[in-house]
Structure formats: C-alpha cells, structure tokens
Image 1 (cartoon, rainbow, N blue to C red):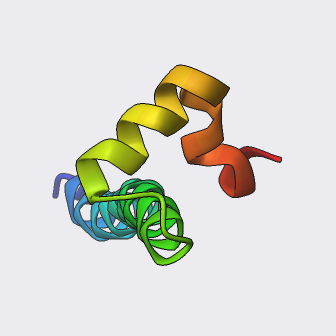
Image 2: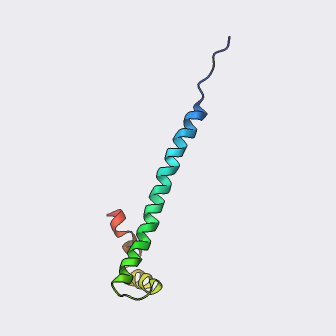
Image 3: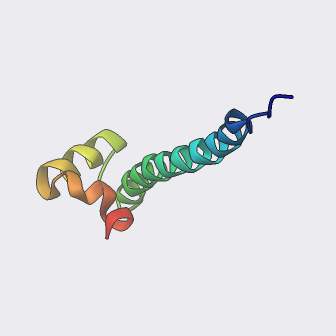
Length: 71
C-alpha cells in the first residue's frame, strides 16, 4: 500500500482565509481613518470635504492623513 501524503492544500485554504481577513482589515482601517480625518476637519469648519482635504495636503503633507495610524 502506498502512503497517503498529508493534504497541505486544505491547511493553506484555511490559513489563506485568515491572512486575507487580516490584510483587508488593515486596508479598511487605513481608508476609514483617512475619511474620518477629513470628516473631523469638516466639523471644525474648514469647508467642504474637498477643500478640507486639499488644505490638509497642501499645508501639512500626505502624512497628516495617516497621523494616528502610523504613530
């Protein structure tokens, strides 16, 4: 009788689900954080969403959008 090989593909399919979930969770956090930063600036009275984002980018650079996520 031939020995059966362990099915690595089944394990990889399970691990892949956790990996994809974690990766998409991180991407979603970064996107929602960016939108939330613009929302706060709108609430502070800095104009529309477009104007607030434009002023943030011009005055403080791109790093301000991810200020709470990275640091």
